[in-house]
Amino acid sequence: MDIPQKYKQYTKKKIIFGIILVIILFLSAIYALCVGDYRLTINQVINALIGNGTGNAKLVIWNIRLPRIFAAITAGASLAVAGAVMQCILRNPLASPFTMGISHGAMFGASLAIILLGAGGAESTGRIFVNNPYSITIFAFLGALIGVVVILLLAKLRGLTPEAMILAGVAMSSLFTAGTMLIQYFADDLQLAAMVYWTFGDLGRPLWNEIYIMVAIMIPALLYFIYRRWDYNALEAGEETAKSLGVNTEKIRLIGMLVASLLTSVDVAFLGIIGFIGLICPHIVRIFIGGDYRFLIPISALFGAVLLLISDTIARTIISPIVLPVGILTSFMGAPMFLYLLLRRYKK
Amino acid sequence: MILSVDGVEFAYKSRKILNNIKFEVKKGEVVSILGINGAGKSTLLKCINKILKPKRGTILIDNFDINKLDNYVLAKRVGYVPQRAEGNYMTVFDAVLLGRKPHIKWEVSERDIELTHKVLKLMNLEDYALRYTNELSGGELQKVIIARALVQEPQILLIDEPTNNLDLKNQLEVMRIVRDILKSQNIASIVVMHDLNLALRFSDKFIMLKDGKIFAEGGKEVISPENIEEVYGVRVHVDEYKGIPIVVPI
Image 1 (tube, rainbow over the protein chains, first blue to last red):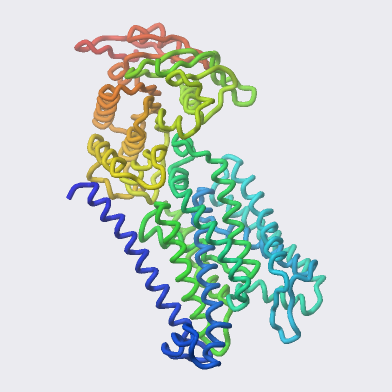
Image 2: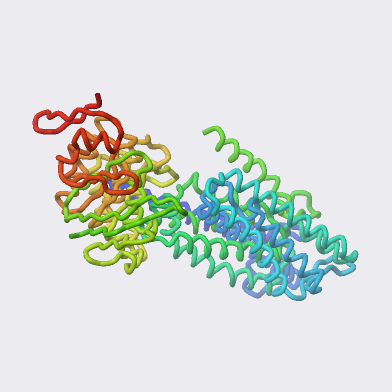
């Protein structure tokens, strides 16, 4: 077989991998709709989805499980893509919204909004509510932006190794965590409960309104990243090569970082910090299909969605009836993976 | 003239790297830039490519001022092979195909794939086509980045030390292939070279840089013991073997 044909077949394999992920995503969504404290059969689920079915099943599906599944898919996809793009832009395999401290910046901003603007809080029953999702998102974005500006400034300094950049990320996250704790210190009991709860990333929080916002930000961001896929491939080949191919590297970096942090901050504002999805998904996808951003972006999105949905389903059912926040689970999975990546770098 | 450089001056902060550089290159001409480390050779290439911006002077490509050309338009005309390259999780085919980027609007065309295939074949990279570039040896990777610049179909090709990572056989082979392609497609080329003998074998014209200025410029006669001693500070003997001049340090 000649090379172009072989190449096209190789490309087809990546597409098939994507299609398999779509199928897995669909099946795990169905499964996630069925399981939980209140078990439903597939028939009940389908009936509820098309508008028939009993009151209870309908209520559980439309008010509890479906928003949760959408939140998992949107957040998983957003974080994974933000991670993939940041790894390229910063030329750093350890980069992700979480490891660079951007998530913590968003967390700080969201906390500020809760306390200062009374944008959200907790009822005496312990339920967390958001009465002004826009101001929380905007504050979370501004918090994330502070993190981004610092990281970009540091990235501009020549000779900053990937490890040094991660250390800068650690410094940024402790700074933001300290800021968040300071705010917490002045909060009243209910606000404090809301904020502490907020630090565990949890998918059970958002209602349809918040999910609409998340989707409305994810879709254009995803389209933008896909539109820029060749520029990211060029950046992967090196700064000078990218420039010689006509890429305005500074502009691509800046806009990419801004869009990635916007994606991250919306998720943090509504769900809290969900760590490591953005770091590990692109790496796992690279193992399967390589680093071509034409495929890496959409397939990382799918993979992130699948991973977060399955993780959340496990978190919901593992010690049922207690529902664990999924952020705890992803950190348990992600931290060893992070160590593995670090070790592999040094082995070279 | 496909390229004319006139009065180019470049400085990092207050340190002058290039000073009043002026030369011209014809279509299909292979020009070697010679000089010691830090003489400004790579800087000069990067100025022609708009990777660096000179403080003074003009650079015309096909009579267009490069400062007035859009980056993508420039990228269609000028290819660049950097000194160093790193492998990643991209296949050799994709890494070379990337050179078509300035020509690609939304998705790759059949022609892009055909051209990539053709260059892979010319560079003897066919067997590696679907291997990741981070699995390649230094020499193979060097061939990949040269292939990438060739697939760009430039009018001018800038190459920074093409034979850095290559063994003797590959040095000769790669230089021969590149020269054949340059000549057959009438591409002008500026090559930074360290190996004087290789430069003598494959170039039409020579530019010697010393302290950021052009010290000597011209045909093979430029490579004289006097000039080399002046530029490199090394005493050599220039001999001839079957019509090809060779430089032997004494």
